[in-house]
Amino acid sequence: MQEASATIPWYRTLSATQWKTLAASNLGWMFDGYETFALILTVGVALRQLLDASLYPQIPAYAGTVIGLTLLGWGIGGLIGGVLADYIGRRRMMIYAILAYSLMTGLSAFAWDWVSFVALRFLVGIAIGSEWATGSSMTAEIWPDHARGKGAGLMQCGLGLGFFLASFVWLFVGAMGPGAWRYMYVIGVLPALLTLWIRTGIPESPLWEAAAKRRNEAIERQRAGAALAPEEQALTRFTFVNLFTEPSLLRRTVIVFLMSLTTTVGWWGISTWVPPYIASVAAKENLPGPQWRAMRA
Image (cartoon, rainbow, N blue to C red; front, side):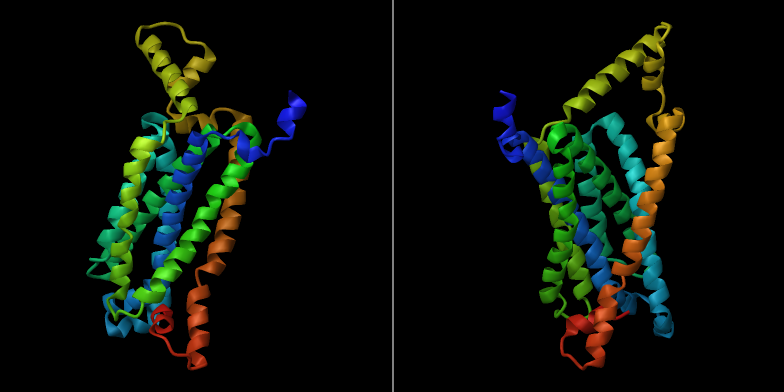
């Protein structure tokens, strides 16, 4: 039996539910990529409308602030979303996060100055970070152990697909005049429709349901005055605190945090400025196209 199962391709061992869970997480992450790269593509032209003309020479600094605060929101959102998903469920948190970043992106189209713009983009970042943390948890918990790494990799592809999607949309929308950046954010409301499918077509994580049941039982026993075992006491604590109570878990958390911080700073520090750099090169070569001019900070 083991030899027979070893000859079956890994993708044929997955159920329809597992594939749908990956699809939902991937689509959520793809639209995250759209929301993020839409900002990178449009931040220059947006700030030219939202700032006084005397501040145009400082647009690169303002653009860096907007993008930096958006990414800060990612980190904060990942923390908030991860904690809330422990209490209200993975699927429900994913729905809330997608609705939140769709709504905040749509509202970004109505920004009236740079302060309102950066505030709304910060909220978009929080929602995006929450969605990523929840979607990755759902995929990891519903996919089997032998395919979990592949599932995580396939989910992460969604971000790059979102970048391509935003670039493709901007290819057409960017030619619609000075207000084109607002249209990009209005289009960003569409991912909210994904939540209708997630609500009906994607199940909750069985691992979370089991953990939530054990937590509720431990809390009830604690309220009744019963003596709790160490593992039951851990269930009654605020989940974020558990990261710092066990030395081995704390060590892994710190190491992973530093690794993630390094890759995030390096990757975003370079990729964020690729569109403006390409636009500046195209402008020097006198290449036509309003899309290039729009990307210049």
